[in-house]
Image 1 (tube, rainbow, N blue to C red):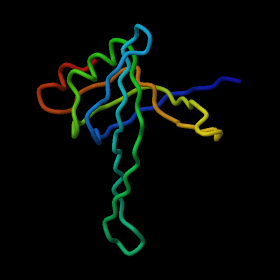
Image 2: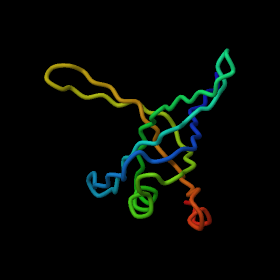
Image 3: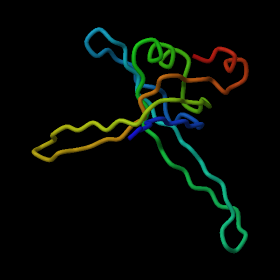
Length: 114
């Protein structure tokens, strides 16, 4: 049976990206607010925001850490991944998007998509 793990999101960064190095590979983490607008049963406009954790590696991480900042509007393609760790004897989990490509959606930087 075939399977597909692909994510596409458009949103705005909630804070400045955090860049570091894992071994010899650059890695960059940030969160993106994805807001859905809809009308409820009474016709009132509503908003619901989901926060998506994003991780980038290598060249994408370097570019994201250099050009993105809090409030930046971005289009991201990637895949879902879940990682786990032990904290004080309790197993913790985090699901995040591993970004393969990012495009700037802010003004002139949009042409510099990577």
